[in-house]
Length: 59
Image 1 (cartoon, rainbow, N blue to C red):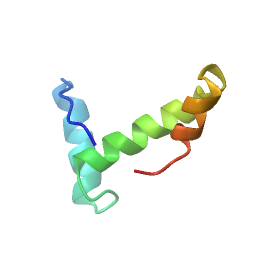
Image 2: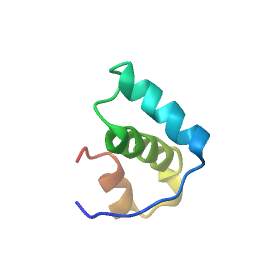
Image 3: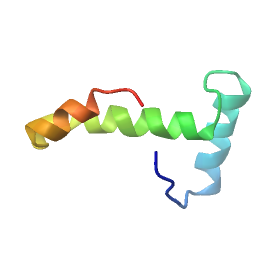
Image 4: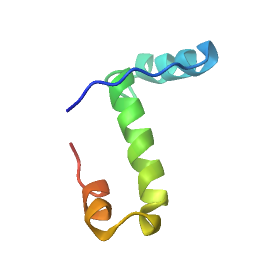
């Protein structure tokens, strides 16, 4: 896995932290990974066949 840096508005961070605090996610990173996976699945038809297979994988 690679590390990236993103900037989010404070309200988004607080919302993520609230979900982590309620034990719905183990940490911020897992929430963000799950959100990205869901969004990539939404656009899987636009990805190449090879990339679409990767979208379905869990890391």
